Amino acid sequence: MTVLVVGSVNADVTVRASRIPAPGETVLGEEARVSPGGKGANQAVAAALAGISVSLCGAVGQDSFREVALSGLTHAGVNLSHLHDLGAPTGLALITVSPDGENAITVASGANAHVLPAHLPADLRGFTHLLLQNELPPEVTREAARRAHNAGLTVLHNAAPAREPGPELLARTHHLIVNEHELAVFLGGADGQDVEAQARTLLARGPQAITVTLGSRGSLTVTEENTYRLPAYPVTPVDTTGAGDTFCGVLVAWLASGQALPEALHAAGVAAALACTRPGAQDAMPNRAEIEEYLHPGR
Ligand code: RIB
Image (cartoon, rainbow, N blue to C red; front, top):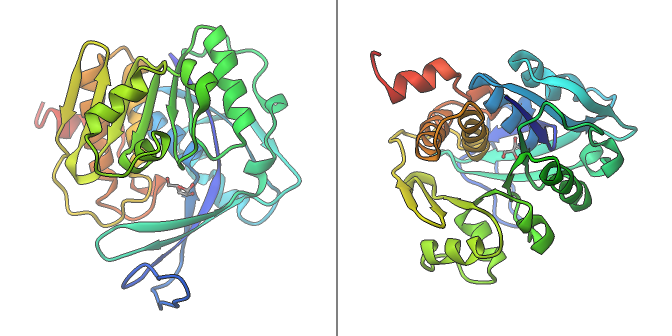
């Protein structure tokens, strides 16, 4: 079972500070940490560490951030034969992390913004699942979903950062993963309304499953027949960067290895919680053995 991730690759420059600066404010922080990131790369790494075969289609530049941006992918054994070298800087994310582990992120997209539908793999044979996010141009995400859907792949779309998927993409997405904020944006409503009702509204637009990640409250997933509410695995967060990506990568890994949806959601939730207990995105992700140990202690 092989997963194709079509998504962004970044280097993350992270500073821990006493708080996330307000507009116009300067806050002094600790030493900057440079580590591999990007929602696409993060999800590819999470899935590969969870034990499945993963390919990433995306782009980097030829600059000094390239090496760190690719380091986690290489370490995790992600296939990079669909990675492109483009004449633009490698994507760079500027991240501030507050003492409670929350973050604010600004992304300089660089090469990610130059990916074209022509860069997508021509042949999808051998892939069973496609995993998408919203850090590449929308036409690339849409075309990847169209081709994958036509080729019979299962399409998972993590619609982050928030960007309205549109009817065409929704109709080709089997499983949509959003947080509460993204869900509210898509439905034009305010945060805090009944999440299950909102998720069911989105379900009616095409996907077979909608998962809403709820941070420290776990996750909620709706399908036509069922609702799954999974509590969060209790941890003290150090850095939540990449927790959502860990969730998505492990979810697709468990599904691609033939596990049922409730088991996959459980593993994804545990992995995302573990990823919050260490600094960084890819650097913080658990591998399959660690996830299994928390799912089945002492087995
Ligand atoms: O989801 C976290 C990621 O968002 C970071 O690694 C950063 O690169 C941005 O893409």
